[in-house]
Length: 143
Image (tube, rainbow, N blue to C red; front, side, top):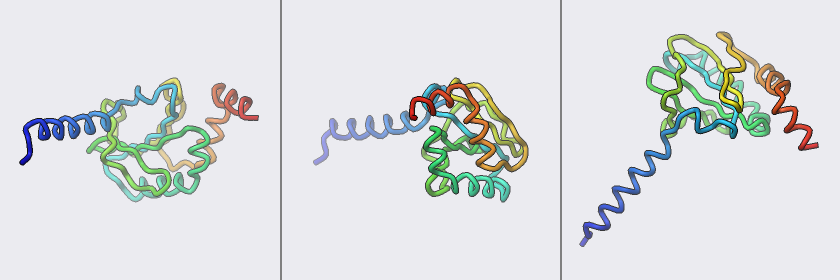
């Protein structure tokens, strides 16, 4: 027979899992750079952009860059290895308008560094990041 304590433990475990998967962009400050593709829905343009970025997964990892997609349904992380959208990991209060296609780069300090309303090559994003003072410092420390 299942005891009441077991049921309560199971419910608490389920609740804590959901809480940890719902984050805000501030949770990534000073840990990761964020690239957000915003679009009213997952359109062909959005899928093309995700495909371009997933082709450069090693460069994403090296630059501590995470990819998110913001639609009217919410903001979810994109698995850079596979291109799959992880709707279990959502961002609350992203503050990014998904009414039209846009790409936004957010730096380690949480400020917007770049915005484009067109498809962007991964190299253009990486070049912009590599010019940032904190990234230059990371490169110097690595070498």
